[in-house]
Amino acid sequence: MPIATPRSLGRRRKRAPLWGSRDAFFTDAAVFILGAAGAYSVSLVGSFPGDEVLLIPMLPALLLVRGRRAFAHRYIWFYVLALAWLFGTVVGDFYHGSPFTSRIKGIARIVFFIVDFMALAILINNKARRMVVFALSIVVVMLFIARYFQGEFLTQWKFGLSSSVIIVALLGSSYFYSRRKYSVCLGISLALAALNLVYAFRSQVGILLISAALTIPVFEQGARSARGGERSSRNLFQLIILLVLAGGSGYLANQAFKFAANQGIFDEDVAAKFSTQSEGKLGVLFGGRPETLVAIQAIRDSPIIGHGSFAVDQRYLELKQDIQYEYGYTDVDTPEDIKDPAIPTHSHLTMAWVESGIFGGLFWMYILVLVIRAIFRVGLLRPSLAPLYCYLLVNFTWDILYSPFGNVNRIWGAYLIIMSYSLLNTPITESLSAPIQRRVPVHLRRPPGKSGVILDGRGRCWRAMRPLDRIRPVPQARQQM
Image (cartoon, rainbow, N blue to C red; front, side, top):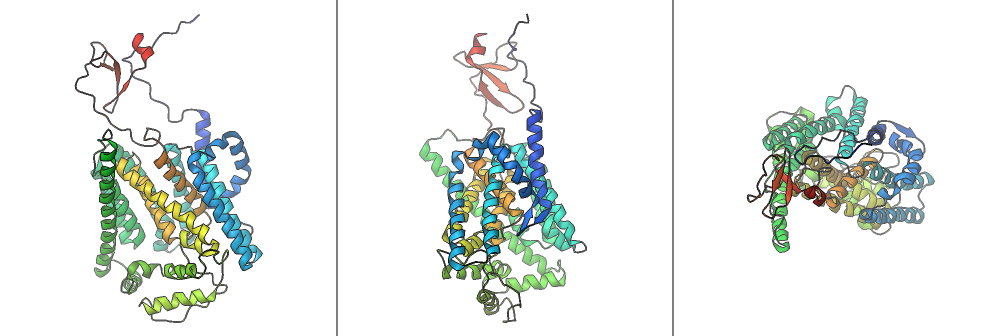
């Protein structure tokens, strides 16, 4: 009969395999396949991405096996506000008498968004590896999207190639970040920003500079043992500094674009477009997104009930043209002739509020605050994947404010919301981020013949963790052996 023998305290622990088990490997593969399926769409009442088609048979099995993960306590406000958004959509469509097709599409958009969230909450399960796997699936989808714009490289760069290159490059940057080679990480971010500047992708220049500024190691990670009042005042000071860095980076991005336009780096069409947008009375941001002011007016006209799903109203298209003409963004005061002109929104937040009323707006305001909190948490705690996390979350903030919501953006939004919850609610451990380093106290001594063990003044055993200079107490049972 074999006899169990204790393992030597000085022996190094074997490194865990890349995939802990066969089940973990298949779960990682399922996450990647689910994300990559968004490269294809199926046309039913509307356009459904392939990932949502896969989820129809997958979700019941996932809920049956690991359903508790999807209904963790930290997600309660997501579900409450998402269901309120759905309720507001139904009420708004009924009140305004929206067409049946528009009603089905509006309801399905929210229902599948919730379904996407539930499935990813179960599959990702707060694991950093699966966050990376899903990010790689986004790269695949973006490359497929870029294929649809053959012969138009600038359009391909904007709608696919840029995001693919950035995600892969920042994943590599995270490798150097975890090893504290911050100058290399900053160099990668600046190179990516310069590349997007050359190809006239203005929003990505700003997003890259802001995310790089937020991950610069301005603060030491010590002082976690400080008293509550000291810690809170210190965190407030750090948040103010991060806000200043983010604002300065956004200003720097705008100035860089102006400099590039004046130096003739862009072709004539791009330079003329930027010049027109920047010379308007409200600045370049409203010049690039004139739908914002139109959506705000539509919200003011019906703030509680909204206008219904995919609301059509010629007045708001005319208002958009009037605003552009009045504030110097165009020389034409006649709107385009568009069949069934939907109310211009071009934003997750304003779209939900315009169509579904106050409940849609409340949902996305909650998500906006959640994501911003997660961004600052990345800046304060600096996990190993900080360059990738920060870029994705800052980019998602831009999407909430200035990009339309639909199709594959639904599952991407669910993924980034789950990432935000993970950063805010999960302790900083090796499963999600960089380990917190602790110096070995000076008074600890190493007993002879025990290379991996240290004794303190009370005779307690501590194990030195390699390669980082961390320590942890050895369980009492081991001390007695």
